[in-house]
Amino acid sequence: MKTRKNQAVDLYSRGANSYKTMIRASIILLGIVFLQACQNSPEKNSVIKSELGQEHPNITKLKDQSAEFTPEIIKLNENVYVAVGYDGSNTSMVIGEHGVVIIDALRALGAAETVAEKFREITTKPVQALIYTHGHNDHTGGASAFVGNGKNAKIIARKGFKEELEGKSPVEPILKKRNARQFGRNLPAKDIINRGVASGSTSTDRVGEGYLEPNITFKDSISITLAGINFELFAANGETNDALFVWIPSLESLFTGDNYYKSFPNLYAIRGSQYRDVKSWGESIKKMGSLPVQYLIPGHTRPLSGKSIIHNNLNNYSTAILSVYQQTIDAMNKGYTLQQTVDSVKVADSLLQQSNLQEFYGSVPWGVRSVFLHYVGWFDGNPTNLYPLSSSSEAKHIIELAGGGNQVLTQLNQAINKGDYQWGLQLADYLLQTDFKRTKVINAKIALLRALAAQQINAPARNYYLSFAYELEKNNLEPH
Ligand SMILES: [Zn+2]
Image (cartoon, rainbow, N blue to C red; front, side):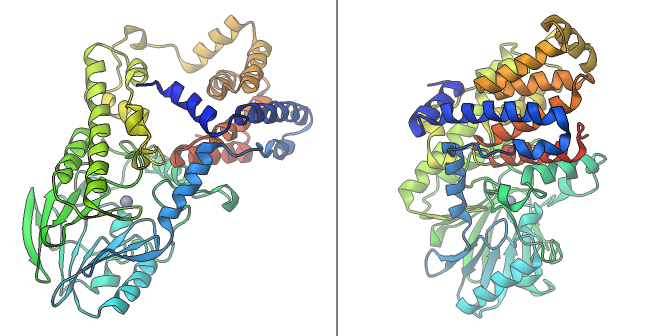
């Protein structure tokens, strides 16, 4: 088992031997150019938007992931069709003897109407039921495209459906900003690759306008005949606490909702969200893995066929999630602090190298932090952190210790030259607590965020770095 740091080094050496030298050379140039530019005026920031030369292997992988969202109606067997890539998520049609059942309903009514039309080209049988796998609006907003006003259809979900998502959060303003950054909603098209498990831009045609309330709900599980086919639905807390999965024994078909897709799972969303039950998530996947699944239809990314590949994928997925969970718990019980816990949790390379566990959307350390905070809250157990110095006071001490602002700036540039971008960012943040050469430091931070984005496999992190860089550029001050 290797450390994450070693993995990163491996990626460099495996994928592109010359890459590290090139990116460093580019960033040194960048550093020189931006320092020169800043002598004159901040408008010249655009100079530092330099091409970093050769593409990092992580970016190539993330670009390849976009193939998962090519719009297509995929026929899995005579009864099951999946619409992939028409919006940010998938919607499926199960054809029974006298009618059809829809599973999930996309986000934008416009996109849902397009898919409903395509489904009708396959069969004109009436839609008898709609099942929501969970309450996130990318799975619910286009319902009326499939079932009209819903009066003649069963609309099925779990008890407590959408409850935790309803109501305005008191921190809604900042959640909105963070959401836009995570999904890269305000990024120029040239900067967008994708959102990890969805394409980089999704339909804006009447978002959420087709949503219909469920008229049948259940608590733990339900076995129900719909359109002449027996459906088994199981509660499965994971990405949300209203999540379920659908199993159709006669068709050997499993609909996982968002507890499974082709990426390491997003155990924590950096846009800011309530706790996602990591233990239950892992266990729900384990349960799915015990079924004889021939067809797996995820909430996002393309479906899979074949018992053995599906069994392996589900197995790897649940092992990875439960490993993150258990290692975090063990580290906490040893008295580790939050950062020590993050540093100590390692998911085996043999798992993280699997194609379905690449960190395109979720990220291991974010999951660790989430579990830690869920169980003990903000205090990490180290008394130093009971009453830490204020940010500005800490920065003042550190800058003094380093021999003054110029010294820190020199170190910052060295960090850039060495490729220690994270350290560079942390130094920049100390300086930004003061007014020391503010424009210069902000420009350094912008360059560092873009340098990190240029090697980041995780789409939310990449989008966030780039969005924040643009905000800094626009505001020329720390955004709040
Ligand atoms: Zn989703």
